[in-house]
Image 1 (spheres, helix red, strand yellow):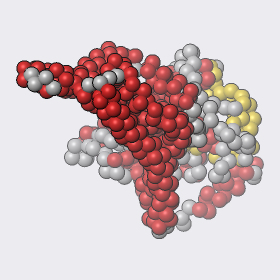
Image 2: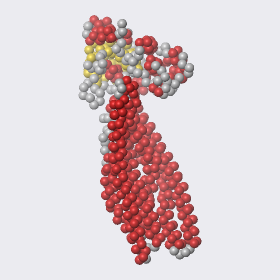
Image 3: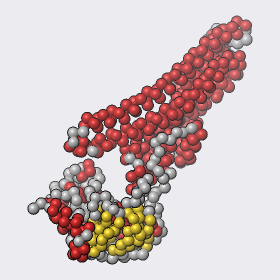
Image 4: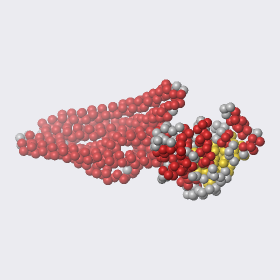
Length: 589
């Protein structure tokens, strides 16, 4: 599936489909919503009874000089208003309970689905846009679930029953009031088209703005190192201005329509008063009826305006839901197989070719190699040759475009992901640490591990004493992204994760490339302990690491060009000899 499309446009039918799908997802909250609708009905009934009681008080009380009727009308009005107020509070509680529950469910489902995606998914989609989906797009729906659904139910009931009551009170005044509605219908259709495009554009600009913001924060070290602050500010100003202009455009679309609705309400009330006075003089209607009609018209046009405004919110939410459903509809590239991988076996790469999504050039082409159980293979090559890609394929972080990769005779695509991650572990170039303690970060590999097992894993790579020197030992907080620890210490935690899993195959993707010589020696010693007795694929460019491998595979322009031991490849005086000479000359004398 392609990257999440930021240029989608929702027509009315598509918006309805999205809302219906959201309604199906919200099925667990059906009873709560029904309770909210019940209380909303009570609130609406109270609003409608108000003008009727006023009519009764005027016609049967004030005009007849009957104080008892007036008193009863006042008492009834107070009771109705109080009941409507209490019901409105309850409907607010129930609708928010359902709405917030739906948002919580949606967040969990979208985040969980993103976690199932392969690296190719994150290659296709900017992290800033994905963050926007989980934050800005879901927040845009908060307005709908907090008060929009409430208004939709209440306003819909109020409009329907107000029309019925108006016809009962005076069909003549109702027809007069309806004279302005054809204008509103025509204007509403235009408003729907314009607001749909405007609010989708706002959502897209929000995603772009957040993406620019995230890049500016994540890359601040590089930005400051090259004095790029003015350029980054300029880029953010550009994206921020785009967001500003989108909001202004959506505001213009809303302003003219809401103003028209308000003007229509004023005109309808004026016509009702004017024509109503004439009808009173003729004796066709009472003064109380005219006043009740004017009050009902005020209540009628307010929900019409609310429903029109709610259309904006619904369109915005539908656009956001469409983006989120786009993530939920993305099929993971790496599907879970059914076979459990054996405890040990050879890793065999047969005729493997690979190209990254949405690219034409192959990164690897017809690569075949077999790594025996317990063998140590070094994969080398110049930058961009495809060596790291080969290692990722052997760990099934991607699936090959052509050919197969097997472990113990089982195609990795047929294996369960759980058994695959137990048998094959990747130690990346930089050990990423999460917020929490050292022990928490080691436990990323196996959440149920005890402190004793964490300490054993650290001891296995010779790092336990180093971390126990901290005041809180393995329970030391690492801070954001492990800033409390050095680069070498962060990589030791990453190696301890692998030791905790105790895999059959270890894939090291330039695990020491970012370390200084002093720290590298410590990590190299830990690596040696970790590699002992297990199949190891090492992507490296340091001779000290490469020479310790049983065999060396040389990748050049996506092809396997040489394979053998260090001495055998030097004797060929080919590509490996040139690389080894270049590496040796780059070392400090």
